[in-house]
Amino acid sequence: MKRGIIWLLVSFLMVASLILASCSSSTTTASTTTQPGTTTKTTTTTTVAVSTTSTAVNTTSTTAAVTSTTSGTGNWWDSAGTPQYGGTLTVATTTDPAFWDPNQGTLSYSLEFLYLDSMFGTNWTTNPSEQNFQLSYWDQSYETGDLLTGWEFTAPGVLVLHVRQGVYWQNIAPANGRQFNANDIVFHFNRMCGLGSGYTAPADPVYYSSNSWDTTLLSVKATDNWTVMMTFNTPNPEFILENMQAPGCDCSIESPETVQAYTNAANPELTSWRYGIGTGPFEITDFVDLSSVTFVRNPNYWASDERHPNNRLPYIGTLKILIIPNTPTAEAAMRTGKIDLMDSISPADAINMKKTNPSINEIECPNGNGLSLNPRNDLAPYNDIRVREALQMAINLPQIASQYFGGGCDPSPEALTSNFMAGWGFPYSSWPADLQAQYAYNPTGAKALLAAAGFPNGFNTDVVVDSTAPYQDLMQVLQSEFAAVNVNMSIQIMAHAQFSAFVRTGHHEDALAYLPNGSLGLGYYPIRQLQKFVTGGLSNDMMVSDPKIDGWYSAALAATTVPQVKQIVHDENQYVVQQHFLISLVQPNVYFLSQPWVVGFNAQYGAFCDGSGPLMGFQYFSRFWINANAK
Image (tube, rainbow, N blue to C red):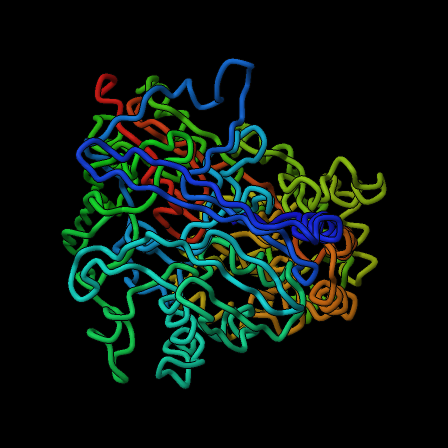
């Protein structure tokens, strides 16, 4: 979740450990008052001084509350009022869940974070003005444990996890409410990577091979009931943690008993909603294909609200997810109050909704992916940088931002990393003047570049468009602007599956491609972003092969401090812009809607979608509540 300044923290802890090497451990006991009608529990947290062999520690308490204030009289969240239990929260999504098993990955539509817990969590007490949780990149200092109370590197490539006690599986057969322990984590990773627990190969080899961090795990074992030791073939803690903590990186833990009861060699995945048994805040009670999914409050959920530590979670009594493929139908349901939350609507739709329903909360968020045209850098004419730069100069980005998007986006071109990633981005305002000029609207300059590249009369080209890509009619705008510099672009729209096979897997396109998610302005973990242009990389749709890019990625993996990685990211950002590997379009905002009676929702990343499809959870839905008085 947060990718952050791990090694800055590391440096501090290493110095502190030298000073405090002789310090003894301390124990604090916190009494937790549960929701009325439930049993009062006492949680004990032990904090141990950092040893000189440890390189990073993050320890959290179940009931610890960090006080962040906007004044001297209270917490910043006090304005939300007193949480209320009960009620039904109704959410709309467009498609059926793709799977019910974390072993299949979480980068497609899944509901697993509602009924499963993850090892890592978010510091819910953090003021959004300090860290924008709408982004997929969060600073490491805001990372907490969910199923873990902490973690540390005891040696290069050796990560020790401290498992939270007092967590229980839902009281459903075959898990039957037993206590969660270290062996459950070991089973999960052994199953995913084929490292033990009866698995000699990954249960889902296709998904396993697509995740670079999975393949670096050498072994995982429980040293006792509450401690797990993971050994990796890389010593880089930034790479290990930023990938493990990233949303959708398989650190939600399924029940071993459920896997053993409902899978076999011929059918290795949990394929039914009835197998959705976890330690999470909600239990699945019903699923109707192409209609709805229903969850109810887990009465034995272990977690308390960090902002209100006397309150056991979740607050919502029933969570109803309606499957509504048609956007206008979903918007109509939002207007009439039949659904409470709606995600990822266009600027135009957001404007119209505000006109008809001014009481609905409209939340503007950065998209996290800048739209782009992806040229084949290895084929003529796009293997000539002058051609790529000419097409960039042919596009009037400010006009597209103001007229096509109605001002709902930044007109600036993007580098590899998002400008919203403080300390990691390369914002247009900081580019040298000559570099800015290469991205400024200049049809005359574009024609001169084309002539110098051997195309004084232009050329014919085409763009392949994924049928699921947003803003497809933007291609017609580009078609007109390219025609002004004598580049005649035809547009071919392909069904998503066909597009994926043609472009992303087979690399059969010979000119330009327009993807559902752009390849610039990325807002996720830095080292993962550097993989975008690595030779032979799965996400390298542009077929870039550059020794500088490959060298930077290797150097980032070998880096031992965050400043080293930041410098590499900065250098590659500038190089990507200079080389015009992609044609940068704008980064439109995305809009989320919530009814005025929903409290706590601020379009937190992972609370609704991850850019490739809805992804409910990341502990957020357990912390929202319905204000019955407002409703």
